[in-house]
Picture 1: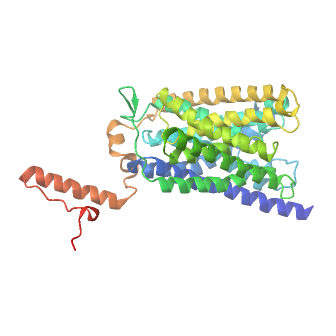
Picture 2 (picture 1 turned 90 degrees about the vertical axis):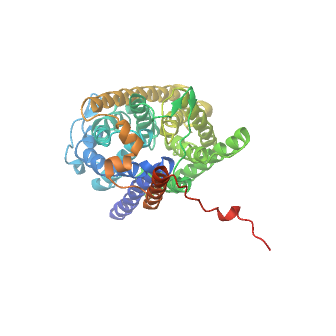
Picture 3 (picture 1 turned 45 degrees about the horizontal axis):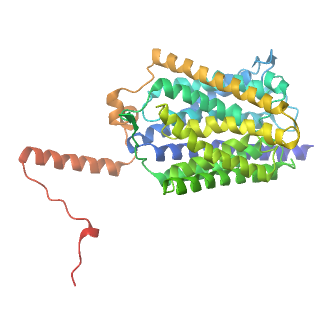
Length: 437
């Protein structure tokens, strides 16, 4: 027994570290997909998640989520002392608390990308605290506390397609809607594309998230000797690969070019969708779920743009839509109770109910905290701050000093020409110079 506890401790702490390392993935992904003038700001918001969010969940949120149950709705104990939780598994409480911290932080990081480039930094601090203190833990209690009302109904969400991703995505949708789009995003009935600052950087972020997801899903076994651990890891890999492949092939044949951001979000969508059912489905079903998610994210992205809700990184399409789909997919493919595996429609009905209530809870909570922030610290950055870029407006430093110096040089040249009337001749690019024999 002692040896089992030691192995489980090592495994869960390692998995927790992988989940926490996913914040590096969120940071790289968002910094690469936003414009250069806002790259520092999105990184600092991830620091808010890892600091304010972590402390808020440890002190209060964990108690609401896993404390003694009150009516199946909310926890009422463990505030300020989450390590006192009584676990039914061979695992030190501190390891479990650390693992759950990673999940809570991941949930609020979903919101970060959806509100990028125009949110007041103070408002984000308030929103991050609210999500980890109350909004996420309460709905998490319904599903992951054994006495929660959705758990009692038999809802299945192994690693958080609904608890984490749907909740974060629905809150992000509401907040982005109240916040409004970036200046110039929707004009004359069209969608204006803002060029991302660094696609390779964003790709690196996806690779980090992909790696961390093995801790996210396989780590949820909480048991190093669980016979399902390797199957969960393989299902996770297959769903991500299928999601990325589906997005890649669809954009290639539909639009003539492969859209890197869609391929990246396709892989992430496969990961989100398989998170609920990674322990309940087989490998071929994982591929099917991942491929469907890779197509859903494309349609969802276009749909959200038609609503003129600005989401710079596609967080709502990835996490919200595919969090819902992945949760419903359990009701279709679960090995014991799935509709397509002879289990009838009962589980699918329970999963659909869970999706509905978590979506409404997250959306309503997002609206509430958005209006609270608007009335107190101010929800949106000023027009001047948005035009200048939130890096300089809130943090006083650009992401890339070389580009900043280039801009200063260009401005000096423009000012010289404007005041003297003398045109400074630009050197021709090397590629434009014809070499003579």
